Length: 416
Ligand code: HEM
Image (tube, rainbow, N blue to C red):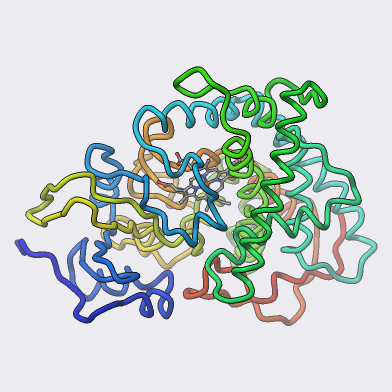
């Protein structure tokens, strides 16, 4: 067995990451034939890892930490500073509990009802329109749903503006130049908006329902028994609103799957929950979304005789792990039924991270995502008809986040 870690030659490979995007790690894993390799990104050593075993290692919190792992660029746009993503140990557990307390059965059911209601309303509107761009429509719909669910007041006149603000945080986080600057600006205005709401709740001027994210985060206490800094609570409330709006990307891919795999969509005719679940799981596995997750080596250790040095940046390959041929049979086929026999491993299927929700950094919003996707899938497959006119439905394996190029244009929409 090979006991040395392959290393990409050269001074820096940031350009390779930009050039190859989602395929940067999988391409090299395939050619080195090891689950890990070393490279240089942004001028520093980095280890890239892929596959189920590497994921299991990555989620060992004794070996890896998150503070200082995410690049500054990402903190200024996508994540925000001092949010749950950047915490370790007890502090992380305390903050993560705050997130997971929002994910009860009742709250998820409430979210399903809201999504159904708003989708039905929109479907009526769409049937009077010549065409719609599904991505743009979903972003607005999900901004409204996110705010309602989180207890955040939103006037109809604000919808357009808030939608753009939240969407810029994920659409342009990885761009360079003007798009990136706009994303940074959107973050500071979005944080200001949410800070104001948290202050209003704390001063008793605003009274959201007790179980909503706005109420919970305004009142949450840290390990010292103190309220969170207003700014920190704002960053974490945006960690609810922003990604709910980002589900519009998965809804776009869901529509694409319904269109490209009609034989699979037909199987959903009875709205059976298990079938809807398998279809959305396959959408989350199949299409590229989150490329890789960063962490830092906590202290020196070796794994499979490969050396990991303290402080080294490590990137876990999300797309490649979901397409690993040693774990997935024919990974490039869209086959929802593969989830029939799937043993529910927390490490082999990681579209939203892996491991444990409470103790690790696995996405807090995975159930929110699948619930919203199932409602939208049921509409797209069973409760409406539409045409897909000629357009560019391709999506990139390089640009992040990947979104179908035409943003999915639909015409002749009718309620079924
Ligand atoms: C973390 C993906 C939706 C809240 C993550 C992580 C990924 C991810 C890859 C990092 C896991 C790690 O660091 O190990 C996605 C994708 C989504 C999505 C692709 C689809 C739109 C959501 C939603 C919410 C949410 C809807 C909230 C309602 C979070 C939070 C974290 C997180 C709070 C940080 C967890 C922690 O650091 O402990 N997500 N997510 N995400 N996600 Fe999501």
